[in-house]
Length: 401
Ligand SMILES: Nc1nc2c(ncn2[C@@H]2O[C@H](COP(=O)(O)OP(=O)(O)O)[C@@H](O)[C@H]2O)c(=O)[nH]1
Ligand SMILES: [Mg+2]
Image 1 (spheres, rainbow, N blue to C red):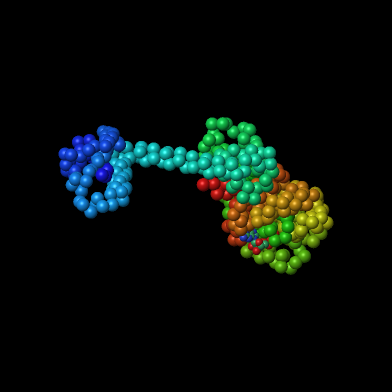
Image 2 (image 1 turned 135 degrees about the vertical axis):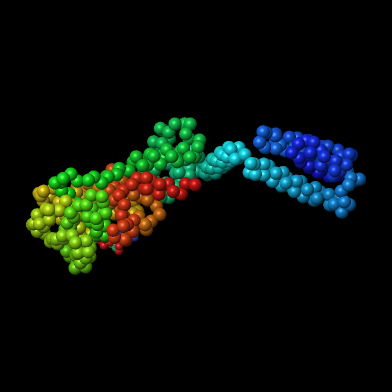
């Protein structure tokens, strides 16, 4: 004895197929409506019949009836699926198609969401408690991704706690809303210093400080080009370098200045500094390069204060330059040691050399200073962008599926 399934767009059609294949003696096991006919799509009906040994099926099929039965069922099922999907996708009425596809997409989204919940539950069972902070399963992915991005754990825990306290309960069951909420929250936590156009007659003096080799000189060259040529409003730009210990360093900046036809002064001590500023006073923006120093060389860092405190025609804006490739603990150490200078803003370089920017987030979260520029490669002048918290946060959360 075997079972065989027949389908048709109407019950009559399915019945006719049964008759044609097994004759009038067919024993119907079940019949059902798989899909109701609508104005625009045909229906689908199924009849399952029992076939006894005397039926019309060829003899050799009966030898291995169990195997054939299964194969038959599978192939019938395949046909059915085929005809259902044909109904869905080969329909002439495009509007219905669009609606159905949208419904399908919605279903798939729901399934994905449920799967993530399931995965997250496994996480929850494995690690229900993380240092007194209970991370609900829906948050596990965000937690793991943010942590992998180099964000400091205690910062992440604090933010999680805040989120759990304030996030509306309704939003929590859905990964998309959780991600959106978290994204917005992180963005709000990164202050950005936007570029402002100078008013007529205003002058700006910007000094760049930081460890050796982070890209201070390169960033100055890029900014000089940006202010002098690339922006809508063109500024007169002058450069002063305090990095006169190595011939190569002076030469590096001189070359850029010569190429861009910008005035440049090299200065050794604070007295010369006033004079150099005076010489460049006709420029709108003056960029000052400094000698890189280890954050632990306190004297060398402190010596910069002698330059910064000089009274001149504009206050000196201090930009701390750090590389995105430096881990959070070291960034913090650098910041602390350079904070004997009045730091106004942070510039991050070498974003092209790392895939995780959570360390930058954590530093800014900790020191609460705005970010002004991001350097994303070695090319002068193109590899520079004004700081953008969208870019930073999207990068931090980019591994969330
Ligand atoms: N990959 C990459 N390299 C950079 C970036 N900025 C600077 N550099 C490179 O880092 C090295 C040191 O740069 P430099 O400006 O001399 O650093 P400074 O000692 O701080 O003045 C040079 O080879 C630069 O080309 C950046 O954003 N990405
Ligand atoms: Mg340099």
